[in-house]
Length: 476
Ligand code: FAD
Ligand code: NAI
Image (tube, rainbow, N blue to C red; front, top):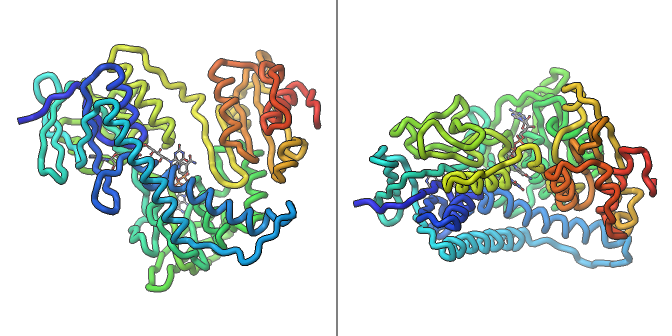
């Protein structure tokens, strides 16, 4: 016997649970299946993002930033602290509590929206008349569901170094990196991408000696070069050691540490001995256990589900969203696709503007951008104007005691339309929203320059960078 639904969503990460909620809002009978287990074996919806990604990493970034402020930042405010200490177990416990609040919040939202939640692994059983049969294998044994519309949102998993699987004790993926309960004396990271920088920052702030080995010759090639250069300067000053152009060789895992053989950019053999090694060299789409072959669901050579611009797969009535498909692996991108797919199922015109998906790296200084980089505009031969404004000249940044970085605007040379906004500096994660709104409304740099911004606020740096496009900053 199988239970019939209108829409079945496989995966309750940000792509899946948001798709389920939007589909339920649109009047469909919805089931959502997720296999993630908490420490007690119970359901933990929210996917990578909630359990071992965005949320726990930001909790630890906040705790470690508080510690660093207390240790090094308070004194200049005249605040003295004696006997400063950290209890890493407590810090990690708080992080886990924040994760649980989010898991519980999603279970509440499922109830509120009358979504049937199934805890277990969902897989394609077969195509049936008018849709598909999905098998759920969970604590209750096997259950069979059917629906005409299936949304696959099974996410991604960490990529391991060839020949060095994650043991989550000594060689850590993002999962193990978020569960360290004692500050390592020496920490190694492979990859200076987003996870490398965020996790490297957490443990450096808490006292670890951090070395990052990066294969590429350049730092953050996806970011604007000028911004990446500024950020690298700040990270180096903080003591984050990054080696570029390296080739990682044999990794030897012992009881007390990990030894990594590597070749530097000049070809010289080197070795790195660390207490723990975090491998953050990208993520791979996760379709294991989905039984895609049973229905002929097409995957590409990377294992990603092949979709068109609207998230349609090669099968009628089967959609896929989030990390398991092409495009940036970001929670908000997954959410936007989830909403758009639910609306398309309802016959509406769901839309995702990939050009205005923001990127944020939650280091200190934070790095955030939306739209095109200067190097991309140059490569495309697009005529543009650039304007920058340093936080050094912003009153609120001075009062905060954090004047690192700048805001950079890129606008079309003739129409003045904003083509990209790049920020490195305090609260870049929040400031970037204004640029996203502006670009979504196809605003010009002058539009932003003419808007009244509160004083004193960091957002004035946005206005000033927009003014800089026309070479008329007021405070610099
Ligand atoms: P996921 O969140 O991976 O969810 C997929 C879900 O499907 C999981 O719960 C999984 O258990 C379940 N599942 C898989 N297969 C099955 C099956 N067969 N049956 C049942 N369930 C199944 N992005 C940001 O935008 N901002 C950030 O700050 C950020 N920080 C990050 C930090 C780290 C350390 C990491 C690793 C990632 C971070 N990301 C961040 C990326 C973000 O987590 C992902 O882009 C996002 O989670 C993708 O959402 P998703 O729904 O596609 O997949
Ligand atoms: P990443 O793609 O950001 O960075 C991987 C880095 O590893 C690259 O710089 C790459 O050149 C390097 N690399 C690859 N192979 C290597 C090798 N063999 N040796 C040395 N270096 C090597 O991937 P990361 O950091 O694992 O994160 C995965 C994804 O998770 C991100 O791309 C992002 O989509 C998401 N994420 C988003 C966050 C955010 O939005 N703030 C935070 C963390 C993750």
